[in-house]
Image 1 (spheres, rainbow, N blue to C red):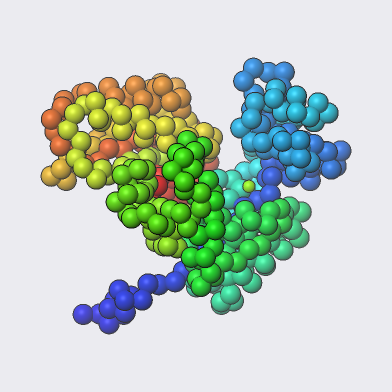
Image 2 (cartoon, rainbow, N blue to C red):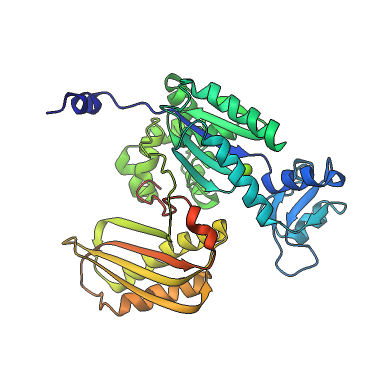
Length: 373
Ligand SMILES: [Mg+2]
């Protein structure tokens, strides 16, 4: 037996992870390129005059008025009547994003972009043999400042979860290191709403149960967490102890965007499967929006309890990305397999046939790691 593997089983490998997040990215690029926008409350997104426009990014000056991403632009205008509103220039942001990734690639090839302005880097072994993840983060921030005239915040830790939270702590232009010995203490003081995957609904449920911080979550057993919060409970149980084994998934040519889930118990009824499909479709939809993508082909993947796997696809003449179409198509495809009574352990939905040729350089794994969330 390989000795190295033996050791690896006993001592968990400590990774060095950096999460880099650009500060108010779209707005900062606009302020950089248009001096007249600088030091002004600037909103990049839908115009308030239009129907259904929302804020994509607000400058820090605009945030002082309570303007936030995803807020209706009309509301943003009410909060700050003298705010400037501009439409996004995605081609420019994509180009800047490529330049940021080029800076990352000087240090490591293990880069996992989460969106145009955010990425995880695994610098456990870095190309320049710098060794210190904190030092690498400093250099990256400096290079972004010097070469692109933009600021980024970075979080440095031994796993993705903590690195991501850390990058948010001293924003903007922040840098925060949370080392292995301080992770558990840090997680204990963390408010529950800061936990990845905890939305407003879960947060208020947790608070109703008297769970306000990581320390409160830590008092619950894994079973109790799963009983109350479903599968995500398992993730909370581990993460509150500082355990997050997710690897940084570097990018390669990607032709599809998918979300799938393996169930703790096999699904048997079509109704159960429909419910899961609706949920998974929601995740795919969110991810499509985030990456500004539409696809012509929707594929349903089913894995049965005997691990036999099938896929069923449907293509459209025009690219689609709306939730309704994804849900309805996935359900129709499911019906075509006569699912009732067939023990099903995994369901997945993917979109492919993207119209955007630029997709050749998308992250390797846009599929969500549902087992962890
Ligand atoms: Mg950002």
